[in-house]
Image (cartoon, rainbow, N blue to C red; front, side):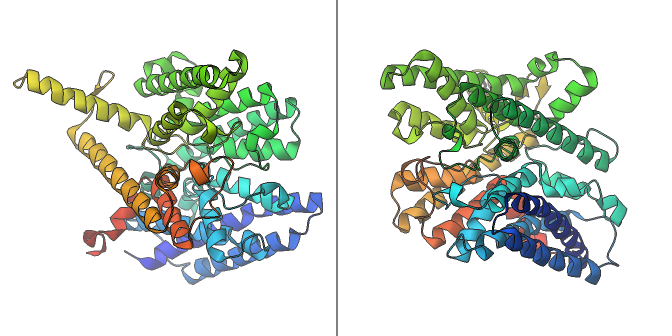
Length: 482
């Protein structure tokens, strides 16, 4: 592995990140806040670091190897989190650097776990940066870099394989840079459409942009302490619910829809049918629970139930209600949705619907083999046979996911946190959701977590965002062997 080639790409990533900081800086200028200098200094330090790395390694060109691709993705996210923490720490909004790093890692991994008790006290520029981080991390700044890496003489195929969420990655155009541009075009277009619809519902441009960024990224950061509950508007809640659901869909499906114009493509996709079925069933179940256990009227219960079901399923983490005070049926149901997540190829986290389908199909196959041991049977998704090697990879992913969940819960328990807080917090960070239960519910935050626990949860956020093996492979002995 050539470290200079890795450093060269990382330098460009930091330069792009510094450019991204200029948008919240403009917001700070427009609102006349005291965070103008902080954001400018943060952008300057990030740009200086990136420029030094690029200049020092400017002769390092060529196609990235598999090892270098994993290194760029993993180290890129860590460096982004370190530089993204600068506005919080330099602005005095966090007491310790670990808190600023936690907030930044939560932003870029689109987790939405926060140590801030009252986001409304933040200056407009830094509050906007907090939301914009999630938009950058939603589809991945590394994926954005694919559009320009060929111009730098550095190929990006291995970056694409390491960065693209889900059990498989699909390059649907011959040129990888074209793939990145199409994905980002869809992402930007959906974000702009949501901004317009939120503006029509009475939001200010500032709030509409901030919440559209975090909706399409399935991130969940908000400019308001009460999240979307600060707006008592069924229209706004329905708009955000729809776009959260859309953000949880595989972006390859959007490309196919645009190319063919056939809406039946959605129904023909077995993962989409399962995803829509889970969202619909959970929405109705939560609505019924709110009516029967909390005496809510049906219209409001259906809106609140569907909002919370889609928010947790897609790992967005917005809230319009304190679901930690719900009936135990609803709270247990939310924990289940936390594990499932959105579709592969979406900006959502979690195990992903396609993996859950394969695991269920694999379990059914075992039962059928017990009845018909001589039959030739295969795991299928719709009409497609899932290769045995992919089935084994999904089993391995799920085992590692459960091991990380158990380890995180155990460590938080050792640090003095109760089981509900430890389990829900670990699952919320590993699945990139944000709010959990108990101390970490919608009415709480992560400020009370032990500093060692915050570092552990930051690690779990990164693991979940990069789907475990992208990072864990770097701890393999074979990774470092020639």
